[in-house]
Length: 415
Image (cartoon, rainbow, N blue to C red; front, side, top):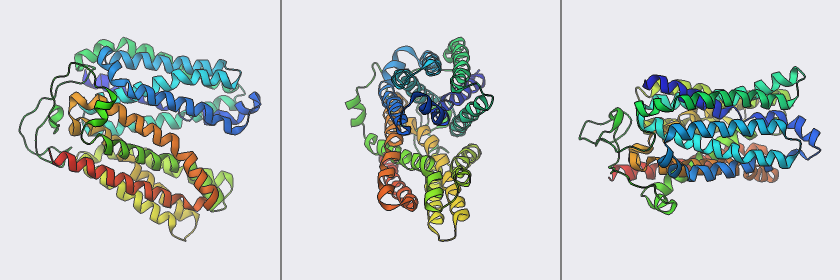
């Protein structure tokens, strides 16, 4: 039963990634048909991001009442309806309206499933889970490109992905009883006992599910308020960790092609290929990290990833041409790979299973804020300094992430 549910969760994360790059791949056609500026796509993405932040912050309260299974099924149905709504949109304001359920649904799925896997499954599954997200994020543009190549129009691309999402929502709805058999959909009380050092923690202490060390936790009778969550020891540095991580990741993903085109003078076609080295490294890295977690702890994996990012950006700064810079951003992508999944998996370890869903919500919201702010902030900086400042920006973000994460680790050791 646990393995069957895990397969369903994997599929859910492929579906979570599918819409992420869909708008970007279709926007060159959409903005022409709508007669709007290219930059207005930012209004739609900002709406999605704002709603994702809201649903992430309220995810604990909703999941506490309805359970992860029901919330995931309903949220997936919301994203499906939103995508089908996109396909029927004939104006910018209609797309913005459809962006609301897309963001609300995505935030609940992300926060809910990450917490469920962190509590009930080993670290390797979290890495492979986010590898599935990368597969979905890469597949969306291919589906849209295939539909456009067949002359069907961007609307049919959204219909195709929306139909897949709706079928998945029906599958998740049918699988709701399975969540009860495997484990409760709400945060569960940690089962603590004195034991040897866990592989997923640097410290010795108490073990919970899967033999993992967890913070002390008690039975929970109500969801925590936002101010209570933020007041938890270690919450602020972990929020900064997620914010700075996504600042690094999204800056690299969004601006990599422009870095090679405007900074290294490559053609748009070659710059796109070189720029894709980052997401390629991230997807490959997450697949490999699933196996590496058999040997290394979450903390060790995070530190390894941070070290690889630093190595990658140093290679990018070497004056040896665009090919070496592409190798550098590939190495940075490998470094990016383990950080987010391992940070997610450590949540019940660091804060206790009873608080993990609440912390997961603010972590997801912080990550979304970082993803939302990174591209325009770097764009403003690059406009005044040039695109070659990209590795410096990534390096600063990585240093901030490292310092914030070490505060979380120090807090865990002090308990």
